[in-house]
Image (cartoon, rainbow, N blue to C red; front, side, top):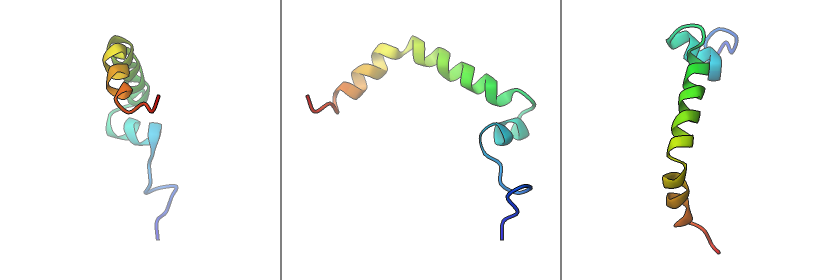
Amino acid sequence: MIDLDHELKIADEFWDFLGDAGTYQDLLDIFELVGVELRSEIDGYFERFSNS
């Protein structure tokens, strides 16, 4: 059996455990910056899968 309070970590609990307090927020900020910078490339990639 899994002790969910002590053995399973997800999202901020997981990343802050691996790094330090604030690691999860840092990752979210980085993903946002990269997403903004690469928006046109990302959109272009997903246009290939559009049905319209």
